[in-house]
Length: 425
Image (cartoon, rainbow, N blue to C red; front, side):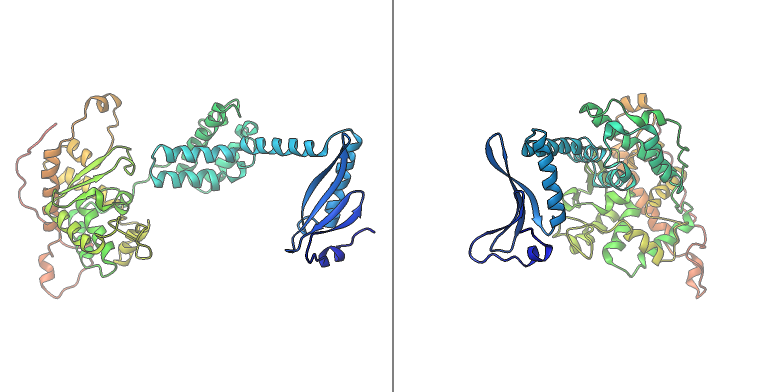
């Protein structure tokens, strides 16, 4: 008697498995633990064999019957259904291994093995997994320049020119892996050179005028939020690393007594170790911070989880709380502030300042020969900078009265006469 869905659903095996037959070799195998599987008994090459269709009710009665007809057709053609299923599964596995998504996973794995920063890997993952999701299941060798252009144009249309251009470079790296592995004949992004609008250069907002920067420093000193965030901003002003390098700082990198902070190459944007000499003021802030987080790995742990760093937005959110909007100054802007004021108001040479900012030499030939670290000059410069900031944040004379003025509209600090230039390059 043929089965019904009701009978399949109500079937129960007590002490031993039972078989409910539907005819032509198809039966439902019911186990005491309640699990049920569709199986088909057939003969091929003079031998009795069994093929598994899958669990019920995931595989419905109707679908099991259709699978039975497929097997019967193969037998009539003289083919072994089991061997055919294995061949199909192997072909699908091979197909999955040559998709764009598979090579994107390989690309991300290689970034990790190469020791690239977590920020770099996260951005790359966002590009290949989210922005390029429409390419994921396509065979890498079948993707055309037109397919890639549609994905890039979708990003560009939202006004994200820089992301679209960066995305083209990341996708190119994925396709080159496919070419190396023999899954594609070429990189379709090569044909798209010049197809995208050029990225618009955008400078991060930064306060570079001394009197206004002094007001910013006073606002930070008066911040009443999380103490680690306040110290992060204070250390950021004194040492001006990239915000990500600061947030991910570990105590193993900081030598308070030796007045040295070493950012490892794995976390530095330029992929080379960057040493920052600490002024007395910076060392003092790190010492204060050590009282709070010194027993942890991270210098600036998240208040929600000590094993994770402060969030990307923590520093900028604190600035917003102080009334400093994103069009005036952002966390990354402290680098521009330092660069501008050191170049304009100090006696230190541009090369010393650039090395302190961990900037790469744009001239390839000069970069190959100029490997100077300028360490002694940088130590003196960082102390000069810290002392200069102390002077900038002294309240202007107008504040000795009860008159209240906006933080960023205070009197310009008149510094002392600068000494003769100590270093020229």
